[in-house]
Length: 251
Image (cartoon, rainbow, N blue to C red; front, top):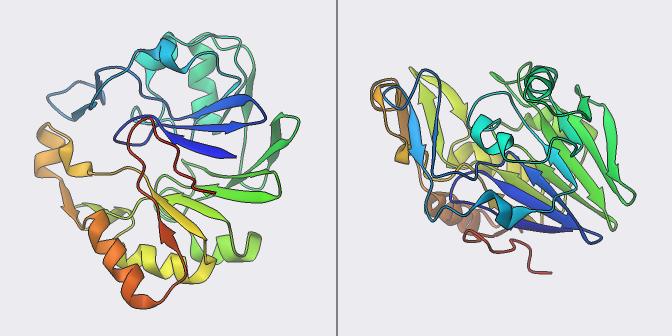
């Protein structure tokens, strides 16, 4: 498996067996949450046309929020591509015209193509019921992809050690409620799951603009802080930081 970063935020491609699966693609210049940029938005660094990432063989959506299910991007993608998503996201992409949609819940599995399997795993609070993480298995390896909060107890019981973990490491709080993991919480997860590689996603959340971002959300921590914690802890996990367009994996 090869994991390729598509932008500076949280869009990725998984490549295996000559095929490509997109995860939460946002491939336009800007992204915003309803009702518009005045409330919450983000500008994509070095935007590339959607056609750059075609053809694609499958699409995975981790949540129905607009920064994961981006309508403007999805409108430009082929509607016949198989989609794997949460139940709410599945309903929305059907409304956008996609015809091969599989809704998944925690513990359910699917096969995007022969040789690649995925298993849905519920995140931690507050996303347990409205988002999904996915464990991809191919070529004798497992890659765990979680865009919000890893539930350490659930992941340890279901997975044990994983080869590659893709998850946030920079804290975002909504009026004190943690929305993604901090460097310290990410380190605790690394100690439990012992991934060979950790690839940060959802980077630089403070780049968002709008009233909601500036008044309701509080940001703390950098990828460098997590890197320092890893190095001082003695945990045998290597931090990988690919740039947009680059492959994260180095073996």
